[in-house]
Amino acid sequence: MRFTSEQRLDDGVLERAFTLGEIPGILWTPTAASAPVPLVLVGHPGGLGMMYPRLVSRARDSVAAGFAAATIELPGSGDRPRSAAAEEARADLRRAVQAGEPVGAEIVDRLVLPLVERAVPEWRAALDALLALPEIGGPVGFSGGVISIGVRLAVVEPRISAALLFAGSFVPRVIFEEARRVTIPLQVLLQWDDEGNDRQAALDLFDAFGSREKTLHANLGGHTGVPRFEGEEGTRFFARHLNDAS
Amino acid sequence: MRFTSEQRLDDGVLERAFTLGEIPGILWTPTAASAPVPLVLVGHPGGLGMMYPRLVSRARDSVAAGFAAATIELPGSGDRPRSAAAEEARADLRRAVQAGEPVGAEIVDRLVLPLVERAVPEWRAALDALLALPEIGGPVGFSGGVISIGVRLAVVEPRISAALLFAGSFVPRVIFEEARRVTIPLQVLLQWDDEGNDRQAALDLFDAFGSREKTLHANLGGHTGVPRFEGEEGTRFFARHLNDAS
Image 1 (spheres, each protein chain N blue to C red):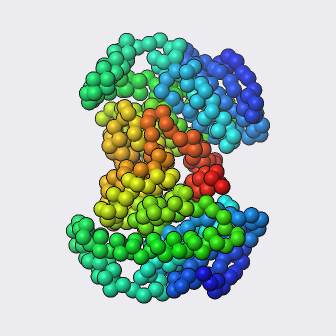
Image 2: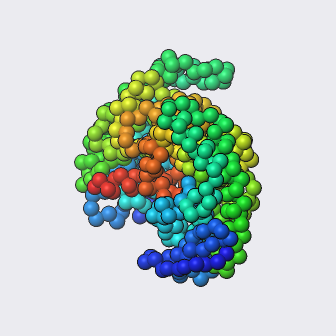
């Protein structure tokens, strides 16, 4: 992990860009922390540049709550090399949605599974590097982004103590089955009128999670209409689980 | 409205018992308020005595947030005269549940509709009396209790600005249809594994509400297992809607 730039934001947040091998990432830490802090991994759908305004807003909330926050670029997004197979699957998905056809499981598998297979080890490597920094202590939460990545991480990565998931994208059957093995506390966001998302599938996924503590927050509105107050509620969810466990 | 007793609780809460005609009630106000405060009507399933520990806990949360809180006994509960028809409907319901049979719409109608018809005018009369007190200014929120009472109140009582509803009891068809006419902001609690409650019916009810701002909080667990943190989240819901509007 190599830091490539740093700037102090106006509200006590130190923002550092880094690379982890070829993967770009961003780390936000409280400038005033006197002891190692918990960490929130900030997920996203890919494209750090385009997502930056929303990412830094979520990161500020985390830092204000006393946590560090970090994110890395997804495979095939932003400045990272495109995958021809993923681009093709995405085009097939778009065609199906535009034609008003149901999106077949085969397209979802082709689009999501290779992304999960590549991204999850990268997030785990980022976690190795981040937890080696003296200013970061854990525990670790995972927040948002592609829900299938969050589910797989929750199953395979024991250092993640709690996850805030956004049920807003297609979930392959194999990931749905993995959800039963998730046991960490979950808060799951669902947009009730998400145009490209199957509400019943999202409710079934929430039902499938094996966690003893799981909460669904469903809000009226479309995919991008998550209410602002859910940001604060997410921070409080992590405050409950990352502070209590530290 | 006649106050029958008063005591100062230890955390800046003045608790006053009152009667409104034959109906007993309780009012909690902040001892330190210097201006009229918003009001939260604290709903419940009936039986003020038995419910008191939970009611006073919710009232303390409201007062800590700067609101007054008040409740009245339901018709046929606590020390109020029983209704033979309601007792019979309740017995029929219990028989159906214990026999593992589906609870027919006819039983639900017999049990819930007369309760709604009697209770709603009483809560509105209580609102008249409470809003006439100099220490209470509004706006008004309705919290919890029998959801059909909350739905009807939200439709007919324009002084109620926001409602926190618990989707944990049978809803007659006529109330379900009224839900479409509710337009105030809602936060709806659902216990995912509520033994005596139909999950799909609760999701359909959430879907039916006409409100542009509505949030569903579904938590793992049975009817009485609502997590403690939902109390705080309810208070913040009212803080968003009762403070902004005041």
